[in-house]
Length: 537
Image (cartoon, rainbow, N blue to C red; front, top):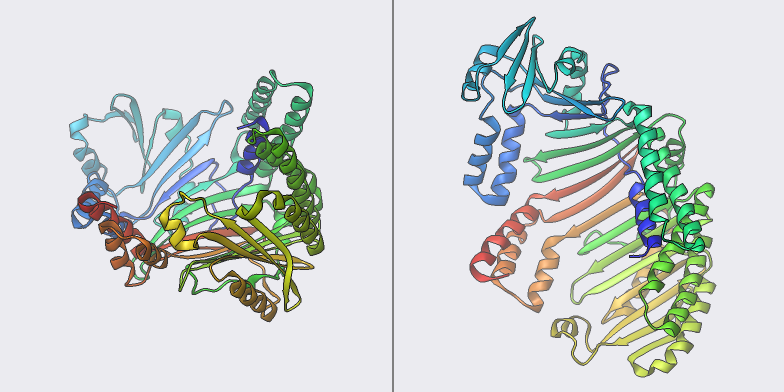
């Protein structure tokens, strides 16, 4: 991977997840990370449920034994917490808060590890290879690695635990605002030092580009820290509804750039949402707002992506031609981004044949057509292997174009069964969007897509939405080739509850991304694994 592509990847990785969980930490909580665990009485049955889905009753029994082995003396009707503070040097000082019912009973079960030493005033020390310090704080037993950690811990912070796990079995809460400023400055310094070291062997042009990317990454990291009040990740098992959810959420600092950007999502309208169908094997909607001040960084990222792609092409003439097309596509993408909104949708069906349709907004559909016409001329030299025909027809105001690529003689027979001897695609261009359909009946599919979008030209904007039916995918795979593992998974998903879903929701200065797995997704994976060990998958 080139230095440019590495930096582009870093830029993407630095972008904070957007999510919100409706909880508030107590003001007394100065921790950088809080881990909240639901009361054992409610959490253990849920974890057992997951274990049964993935490994059967024996696994559930093992899980219960492991989770409840040392709960004597603990109030299993109240949540458990772990609070991690950082000193100015960045050293973590975690404190676990155990809901205490009977201290003597709790210590009694630990006899195999030794006897806690009473240091007075409710403080105890116990050696388990390293010293642990425990503080009896009435309703809570505080456990830490140092005396100072447990003695200085404010028990009032535990008031947040009940709210944090009101909807979750486990929730991790990160508070960037509590990171000591000297540590932030040290991390930024280390980042700069790493970049300087990486630039040592670059020529002037490469170094200048790398420095530009690095400054953007640094700015973005600092902005994420300054703008994020809390970042939460919560896991919830819902036996009644046969699903497990993972929420990833962010609450932004009031008045911060990220909070203001989020506010712009209110009232946003999607223009391509009509393309997708909930009954499909998979559907995806993604909408991104682009601020004017973000264009420069987006342009830098596109330059890095084009360079990385061209670097992979060994033949100089081909690389030069590819770079020309990629630069034109990048320019069109940036022109679209400058309009302030990027929208992408996709829909995949498997009956009666595999059909892949997608669409994305563009600033000028005519420029796409001109680029396609240019490519069609260049592809004439390739012969029948690749055929691109521009303006082959019209439908509902859209111009149609045809692309056909011959599979090689030694192509996998499964690919031939799915696509035929040639992979065919139909493109449709309108002034503000490009549509693509791939499959055996792609022209019919593209016309249906254009009609669906025309029938629903506007819908509430959603940052991200996905629906994926594992059962439909497995049934389609079985129609091509079968084996014991696949058969077992298909049997499980035939009962439904086989969806993987992603949803996003925005609040005032909060947003949430929820990933949902229905029970039979987990069960089907387990059934396939079990069958494969005996019959192959």
